[in-house]
Structure formats: structure tokens, C-alpha cells
Length: 347
Image (cartoon, rainbow, N blue to C red; front, side, top):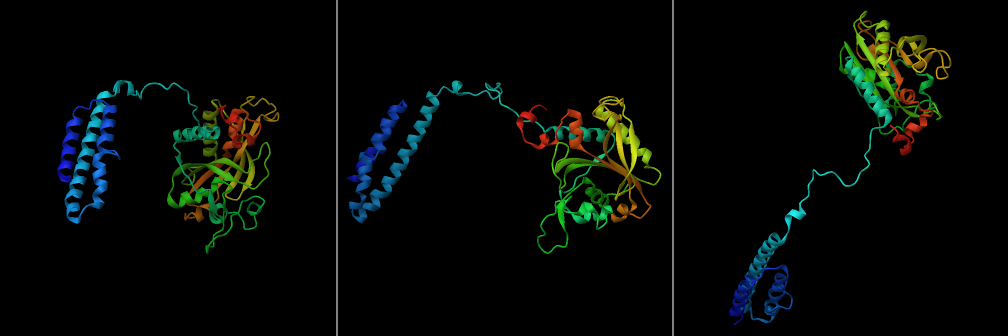
């Protein structure tokens, strides 16, 4: 009796579904034949009262009919959705311009300047080198000929990191990009010319012209003795600054001392603001102090595994952050790292 009734419900449901042509009628059909209070569902609820023999017949039949009803319900639903949906009105033109203007970010002024400097040096045949900001004492000081009692190693100048594990190395935040020199020379043989941009850290008080973290730029050129000289450095420096400032630049060298170069120089450029005639920016001297330079000390070459006297080269560096202040006429270095969007958006 129940078996025949289930088959009859299934036949009625199939026949009734053929007349459904709207989503509202389909919802009513679902309630009538699959709803909680439907006759079909009431029969399934009564399975617990049947004998074991009847359960073996009615149970599988009920499940099969329910699966078929659910299947034809979903098929009919998809057909109605496809038929009644205005797809043209739903279409989205992904190529159409936005109705709103979204604020977009841009590169930091120091990054813009760094990219420009890299492009100029690339045009002069220089490759790009890089190294870690967390450096070892070996590469930051030892191989660069810094004596063990050099004041630059003191806590007043260097951010030393807490020693971890069993390693004998002492780690620090690099104080200059010169730390990359020997790392590069250990992996490459001259002749070569490379630039090394990056952030450096020094443990000093901040003011309008000093910051504990700033961007530095290193230039290293090495070749055979007699091929790379001080005159080569002077020519390269004048060529670079001439392209950077878009005018003829003169470089002046003043004797100085750096452990990793011999001889060493401080180098100035002719003032780009007053054309070397004297102004407040250059303190009426006509010269702007830029950075340090010199011929690479042979001890540094030996640290890289080269024979003493086998090669000759020069290294020079300057502060990219200081150069940005000159380019954009920024009076306070702290503005560059302040994160103040009112300032950054001007560039």
C-alpha cells in the first residue's frame, strides 16, 4: 500500500512540475512535495513504525524518490533562472572607467632618487650589488682594516645586536654599504665596476641634518694597476654629478683618512645653487661637501683573497638622503622618515 502511494506521489510530482513556469510556482511545488508537512515526508517519518520487512522495501524506495525529486527540482530551477534573468542588465564592462577616483600610492622621494642614480651609473657601465643590513663584525669592520680599538666600533657609533647561539660572530646593523665590498670581491674577479645602494644605521642623536637610519650609496671600481687611478675616480664623479644635476660639475678633493682606502679624500662639488659663485647653501665658498673617497687599501684586497699589489681600484660613497635634501631643498632630514603623508605627497 505505502509502496504504491510513494510511486503515485512521484508520478504526480513529475506531472505537476511540467506546468511550473515561474519561480513562485516552483517554490509552491517544493513545499507540496518536499516540504516538512508534505505527504511524502510524513510517510518517511513513519518508517520507524513499520516492520523490518517493510522497512527494507519502503526505505530504499523513499530515498530513491527523494533524490529524483530533488534532482528534477534543481534542473527546473536552473532553467527558470536562465529564462527569467535579464543577463544584459547584469553584464559588467570591466574596461569601463571607474565612477570614483581612487587615491594611488607612489614611490618615496629617496627611492625615486635612488632609481635615478642607479640609471645613471648603469649607463656608465656599473652593475648593481647588494648585501645584508644585519652584518657581521668581520665584514663591517675587520676586512675593511678597522683597528680593534677604532672608535667606530664603540656603542656610541654602532648598533650591536645581542649574541645568540654558539656562533663566535658578532652581529650589528651595518654602519656603511662598504661592508658589501669584500663580499662582492670574494665572488667576482676584476675588472669590474659596481654600485651598492642601501640603508645604513648609526647610533647617533637625530637633528635637522642627522638621522640614525639613512640611505647610503657606494661605488667600487677595480682593475689592473695603472688602469684605475685617482684621475679615473675624478672623471667618473664629475660625469655622474653632471648627469644628475644637468649641468657641468667640478669635483674637488681634500686629504682625509678612512681605514679602507689609501690615499683617502673628502670630495666636494661646485655649488649647483649659485654656480660656485658663493651663497648661503655653500657658506659662500662655492663648494658643497658630498662624501668620502679613496684608492682601495691593499689590505682590503687581501681580505678578499687577492694578492697584494695585483689589483688597483677606488671606492667612494655619499648619503642618498643628503642628496635628496639638496635636490628637493628639504630643510630637515627627519621629514623624509616621518611617515607624514602631507609631506610625502608633494613628490
